Length: 323
Ligand SMILES: Nc1nc2c(ncn2[C@@H]2O[C@H](COP(=O)(O)OP(=O)(O)OP(=O)(O)O)[C@@H](O)[C@H]2O)c(=O)[nH]1
Ligand SMILES: [Mg+2]
Image 1 (cartoon, protein in one colour):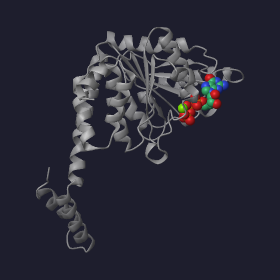
Image 2 (cartoon, helix red, strand yellow):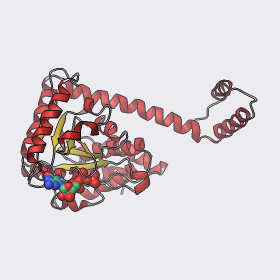
Image 3 (cartoon, helix red, strand yellow):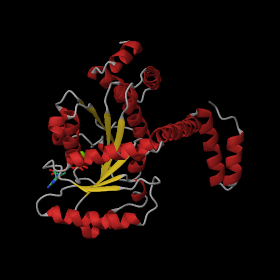
Image 4 (cartoon, protein in one colour):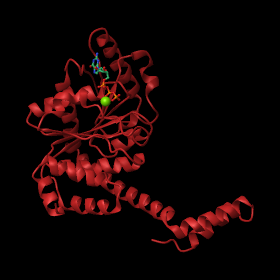
């Protein structure tokens, strides 16, 4: 298949072509990467899309929530793509969405496209691929892109920097709920959803909302005039999933009304560009044989105390850095 044929297939929304295109994007081979870039530059989304990040600790119910939300979106006539950024990928071979069992009905539908996290590379690399896969899904006509991540390490920040709306799922346990929040996470949340608000946990979930509302009250809002939204849902009983979708849509409308939506996407692109340049510079810097040898020499000299680290750094950088 030529790149043009592949691009055409993606643009026409053919699943097989989309899957193949994403495999190219995820490939570690340099030649595949070049083909992937060429492909991405040939496709374009022709409609308005919504990108939603969905995060939360393991077991909070992300997959169950996505299954419920995804099905609801499809009922509304939308096409849904589910992608994942999984910080545990390098070690475990990618666990998120590995079990499609919790998204059984969703994964069987034609209007849904579910792609597990790429299985190799650093978090930055995985995030880059997810970003590119997102572009491909949009070109293939998916209206809503859900990006799932586990609330571990930096992955939430990676995901927040590629979506329009960042939604975090929390457990009802009100007493210790606030302690569970990682530094810096509160500042990036747009919608906070307490999941598992069913049975005995319903009241606890309501209390948790009050507690979170009080805590967020003290924060400077992420966007002027747009506050964090709170709600309780039961993903398993499919309760208030429609409300969650309304809140997402309301949030997106508010961003658009204030002119933030487009500006934020542009800013995300610029940051992405800078990040790619920096990553590539580092890769070339440490990847070149000449540089590796030069660095090894200097390291030996530092170890022997023949040169100071600062002098070594200047020496290294003033020597030719090969491209
Ligand atoms: N009672 C109740 N249980 C739920 C709800 N949502 C999910 N669960 C259960 O919680 C467990 C974990 O759900 P998952 O959807 O796999 O959670 P996850 O966040 O995707 O977990 P990881 O993929 O491991 O990070 C499962 O046993 C679900 O059945 C809910 O709304 N209410
Ligand atoms: Mg899951």
